[in-house]
Length: 464
Image: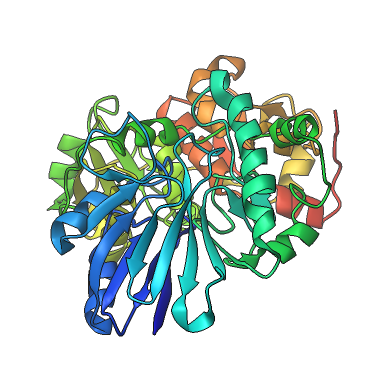
């Protein structure tokens, strides 16, 4: 009997799959994440042996769990053909079939997102000889396709052309009824604008996916695909390199050390040598925080912005509401290869304030107050959204500096004047405000609600 279990990972918006045959008691895991206990537990629950750990491609947005899963389950690692791999795996050929009892997975060479990309056609003997589902990895999503620009400008157009061929000569001839199981859902930066559905059909995508429903020529497809492509997150290049090396930390993240306020202050004194991350909400952070801390609130966006803003070379120290929040943040950082979480502030800001240690703060303005004060010569309004967002409209006369590049663009701002930061909702604006405070800006305010609230109240908009 067919087993098909999707495993969704919040934050990463990543989907892996356990697929197999319960009668034959054998299964494969497709695109496993780094913390692999969930697959082992699921296999035990269903009485399955994991025979294969399959990589559709060399991932850029999370650390692969294929090596850890193979070590702990005895599975064989299967991937596409690439000379970049630095560990042992079977590089499968186009058309090769992996047998899982009555269930089988046929390898389809499907370059475009990456050169070595493979997809997997699913057949079940109880449902005839024809394939009924396709695991597309990062080539085809609901309402979107994979981005071809993660290996650099030199290969982008070639990969875009290969993606066109994969979609139109390999996928669409399979037929409209074939179900689509992608590696990502909405929120992942592996596409431009992935839709909300975590599964689809080729027929649905042919109707509603703008990559497929316009019947563009190859050249038109490439031009359309590359226009307006957002900048890839900073950590993607690092993870590309990490995922072809022999794996480390295969048994989960280390538990960071709880630190007294005094020890925390001592370890975090040099802000250039360590990374302080405050996980609390933007309003809690604004009310009072450890000087020098970066506010990346533990919400759904956390793992993406941690990847953008943190590096893997310096120790990370966390500040949260409770130990559960610390544990969750440590796990999410582990999933993107940020393993140097070396401590956290015991009992959070309660112990810090009771110890009488220094506090920093960030002011909070509503959008109405920002509108009243934006023309004040002592106020600098800073839009920290991505360039493609700013093109759709901004607060009149606001300066722009994408938050990911703000540390390199501080010369445009006057440290002696108030800086009011805004973004889409206030989340990235609080990251920006914390950067400015750390860099010695004395008067910094964040705008909770930011552009969402600004538009809600029909306040003035400038377009350029």
